[in-house]
Amino acid sequence: MRVQDLYSPGAQVACPDQPLAEAARTLIASHVGSLVAVEGEGADRRPVGILTDRDIVRGQLRLSADLFCLTVGEVMTRDPLTIAIDAGVTEAIEAMHSRGVRRAPVVDGAGNLLGIVTLDDLLPAVARELGELATLIGTQARRERSLVA
Image 1 (tube, rainbow, N blue to C red):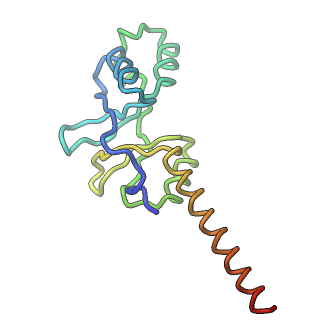
Image 2 (image 1 turned 180 degrees about the horizontal axis):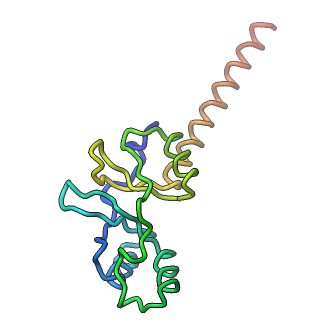
Image 3 (image 1 turned 90 degrees about the horizontal axis):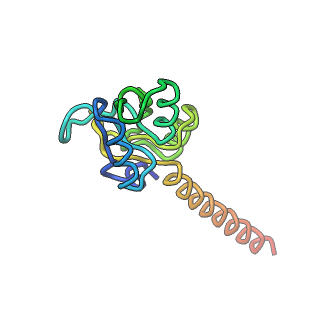
């Protein structure tokens, strides 16, 4: 199975120079846990960062600044892990694990943003594949026992 079968297209985005308070409102209104910070417009938007509610709190404390005085670029996590649209599920999980992240922007071959994928999207697919494998193993074992009997 591939990421293209599981990701959420149309990720919520922010610009690095956007006021942080505005981005926080977008998180709340959209009921999402992160915004992808992008540069460029239209189909040519490249992820340059990711902003989570945790980034907002940590950034405010680190900079000792008010939410209304900061920009997304000042507190976002720069250089986010991106996952290619044609990546396999296992490859995506391994990349996310190695970077210690739960979500990653999904990009096309040119690095343009297509959407976002989370561990919550990927893990059920792995569970289904493991279930299918267990069924296959059980079927083969029953077939072998019936041949011996």
